[in-house]
Length: 461
Image (cartoon, rainbow, N blue to C red):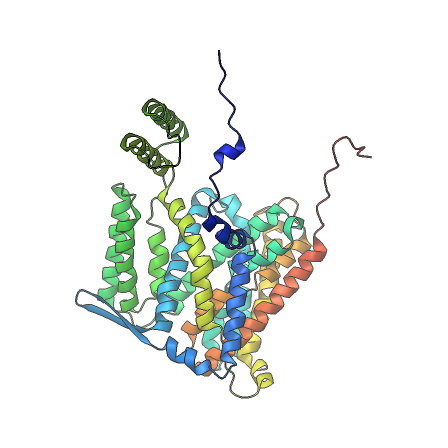
């Protein structure tokens, strides 16, 4: 009997097209672990340079341009700056909500034992910085900024951790990721409770009704993202009009997205085997030309099977990571990171506001995270991750002090006074930079480079 020819790896790979050659460097950059943090850093430096240039007024006028959105009788007129901080950041918070839900269901927060250590560490990393800031700013006009040093920028923190590569134990990466996610939950609660004023109950009721409707879509088995997008947009606009920050609606909306599959693994394999049989009977495409109607029908059934074997939550999360990393956060940095200081910079740095933010991010986060972790382990509430040392916990706590994105976000909510807002940015930029450098140095000296595996046939002795 004639045996079929083996399938080579080259036959499975698609033919490289001219567009693939052009996009290859961009795709290689996008897949790099440092790409997101690098682009965010570039946007920040660009914003700082623009703010110090003779053209800084141009950016200011652009951001103050009014844009209006009409939805039936309702009209929402906001500045471009406002739409970036409420609209685009709503997408970011929606992604954060999806990540939190995933971690609660199947990740590092899915059990009390797993969640205990990062949760306790995150609480310590929020309370101590807020306390330090409050102590330095009590009775001053800047006292409302106590929430600024509480947040961790997960993109920057994990990007810096990636610089060390395989030197960092997996347990420390998981710990810092879970800590940052719990930190995000805390930051959202702070925004919702302490930085929301003048609530319109009618608009809030409409927004809550939209969230309930989205839950209903989930319950009846809706898996198409379009209905959720429409209902979610209405919820965000209603929250925006109510006075409750729109990003809260975006995060709550994420919890209504379906997180279950319709078929399990064995069922998926059985269905795909059946469809492969139908494709063989129909006739395999023998070239890269258009498929026949019968072939295309089978391929569409295969796509449907793949959709039913994956959860909408995971598909949407995967689709949003790129736009959020490479568009939303850099645009937010461009719109918010520029600093224009009126007067003496040294005097500004010495102000209680700047010192409170810097001390909260650098000292408060380190002491809060490391101290709470030590307490949790000593009280036997949780165990230190395997392979992680106390020096590495201190380094991770310091990296948690990189509070860039969320800290800037809370700062613009806390202060309507432009001078206080600019001073807060100075504290955030200086504090986050010191925390990043300090955390990198501590982790560099508290981790070992991985020992290369011995070559085959060599004497291990």
